[in-house]
Image (cartoon, rainbow, N blue to C red):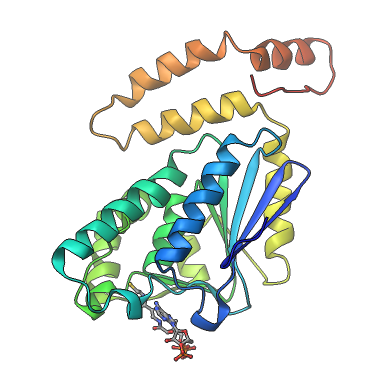
Length: 260
Ligand code: COA
């Protein structure tokens, strides 16, 4: 199912979501936000899907940021509302999904585009990718979680430098900072995402959901990550996937997980 600005393809338990607004380098306006919310909400509920890959259309950009033309006349309260609803409906929503979301960064990932990639569970990039948070050059700050997630992922000092200087990282620099976990050629990007998805598909969807929840808990001040892990570990023992995974190991066969 495609929407005005997104293309969705489902194949063998993997959903491929492509932001498709190439004339504006896939910049995220309110309509794109609304469509992203709807598509990710539906994919989370869709039992036929176990992994999601998010990328941008065209060869130039993943997403070149929030749509500057749209917010240039906003008042403070409109700015706050944009940030709040974007975080709730898309950025934090994706981060907290129980299905893994892989960002395949195929070019510029700037501002809201990098923030979108930061919300994904795994990031891989093509060697032409450029990443940064240039918001302070526009007189604003990252508003879709970028001040928090960039520091969590690459460390406070590096995040400060990138956000205050608006410096852009190339793919190799992003790799050396741990911002992306693989760098490949443009031609190899989607096949690399597919190989990664295939590896994830072999594992228990139920356990993967519990692992994402436990890892995220470390970054939530209202939760104790170790306690969340202890509880999630225990919950796994009651799942069909645990019975199937351990039984398959003992019977020396591949597990066939139901996700329950
Ligand atoms: N919001 C709105 N429109 C954007 C955009 C954004 N974040 N990023 C790019 N576009 C639009 C441009 O306005 C241009 O539209 P036009 O052809 O109607 O004039 C089109 O996309 C192509 O961009 P252009 O700037 O001509 O491409 P370029 O190759 O010269 O430069 C970038 C590429 C990414 C360096 C440049 O587009 C840029 O700096 N974008 C803004 C990045 C940013 O500050 N993002 C954070 C926003 S919070």
